[in-house]
Image (cartoon, rainbow, N blue to C red; front, side, top):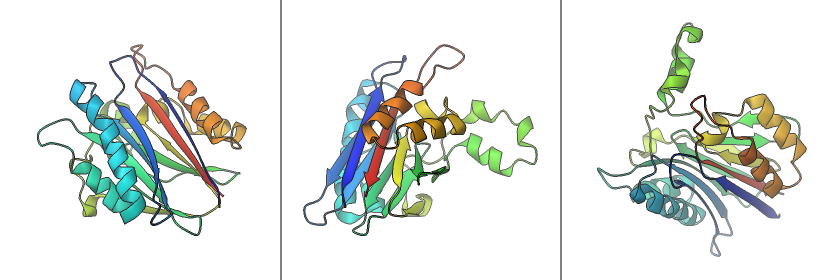
Length: 227
């Protein structure tokens, strides 16, 4: 099987980019890991730390598995100190993959006919959307920044695991993309660029919009095909 990966980033308007992505293929396991990290804030510490978190998650994940990779990245987060959220996918020999996450980075799968979300945001907005009797009365968008699980807080019991079947395209995004681009528009972009992971990653980043205040978040997309 051949693995093709595309990565694209665009810095937001609030300061130096604190998103980071990394890929790594282990020569001992022949597994490939792709990690996406979204640092909280734009201070010098998190801007420097975010690439280390992504690299650690990918390198450990490719050897020890997805959960070990994500938790190892969390060990690099100081207490107190800058924190981050992230998602990590690691391939298996049969072409499938395992995916774990902490926070509100997202994973999607594309099978050629539909775009399926694989993750659920670990924030107050997502929680209230799920449990509120009338979600229309809850200002969920204003609560998206209240993240309940981060890399620094992650433990095995709070890190969900999803098995991704073989033969699909895996798409990872930071909230700078999926908070401003709706599911239907995402699906149109994926359909249009499904044959080129790099073109798709660039299209997703280009589609990210500014908020009503004119500010634009960092935007990063990682696309992996394992076929």
